Structures are given as C-alpha cells and as structure tokens.
Amino acid sequence: TAAAELAAPERAALLARLALAEAALRRQVEQLCEQRGQQLDWLARQLQHPAQYLARHRERLHKLQGQLAAALLQASGHARGELMRLNHRLLLNRPDPARHAGRLAALAPRLQGAWHDTQQRRRGDLDVLHTALSHLNPQAVLARGYSVVSNSRGQIVRNSRTLEPSDGIAVLLHRGRVEAAVTAVFDDDDDPFAGGAIASAARPE
Image (cartoon, rainbow, N blue to C red):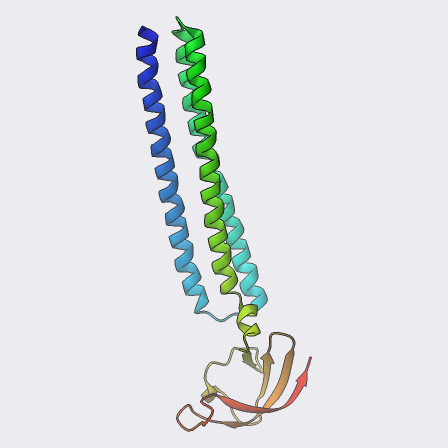
C-alpha cells in the first residue's frame, strides 16, 4: 500500500509533465510556423529568379524539418527519462512487483500513442508548409500565363518608365525564354492594354 501511494503521485506527475512537454512543443511549433509564414509572406513580395527562389525556400524547409525533428526527439527523451525514473523508484519500493509492472505496461502504450499523435500532427504541419511553399513557386505563377521581364542588365522590370524604345529585354515564360526589343513605351494611363513596354523581334531560347 505504501508503494502504491508513492506510485500514484508519480504516475500523475509523469502525465502532467508529459502534458506540459506536449504543450510547450505545440507552442514552439506554432511559433516556428508563424515565423516561417511571415517570412514566406515577405518573400512572396520579392520577385526573384525562380531557381534562386526555390533553392532558398527548399533550404528553409529542410531547416524547419530538422528543427521539428529535434523538438520531437527532445520531448520523447524527456518522457522516456521520466518513465525510467518512475521505474527506478518503483523498483526500490516494490512490495508488489507484479502490480507495478502492470502499471508500467499500461503507461507504455499511452506514451507510444502520444508519440504517434505528435508525429502525425507535425507531419500535418509540414504538409501545410509544403503546400504553402508550392503555391508561392514562381514556376506555378508562370504556368498561369504570367511572365518575368528583365532588362539587358538582368534586372527585373517592374515599371515601363525604366525602359526606352530599342532597349533589349528578356521575357521568362513557363517554358523557355524569349529576347525582344522595345518598340514603344506607355504609362498605365495612356496604354490601352494597361501594361508596360511593347516588344518585338522575339527569339525563343
């Protein structure tokens, strides 16, 4: 009975610590996701070369995966440590080893279930981040009919006023690239097609 009285608080304390560890891990992941979401929102406003854009975000996604894996390992290690300490105390005070072994056997599936649920949630978080990143993929934007125009110095053209007639430009499409020369430049106010420079002499690459 004395060992049972000792074991019951230990079990409750272990479950409480597991709940705290899970809550701390959830907050950490939510903070990471919010930070990455803000970074992705900022990066979405910066038009870069598609290859550079994808390389940078692929690296960030890998880094986030590593951080999530480390957090899961840390939480699992903490829970295993608590279980081992409880097991040690039960072994030191074991008037009824069979009953204590049964309690440990009952705790093991709960720990395994909590670990599995945590893994599933983290996989879901990674899937959401991967989907968000794919929506920001410049190639997906180009596939919808948009294009990226750069001047002869390789700078992205965002304003038609930065170009002059006869300037050379490169137009990046979903498939391939064309080079052209500007024949006329219009402002948004006087351009019937509301857009930039008119180019000719396209040459596909």
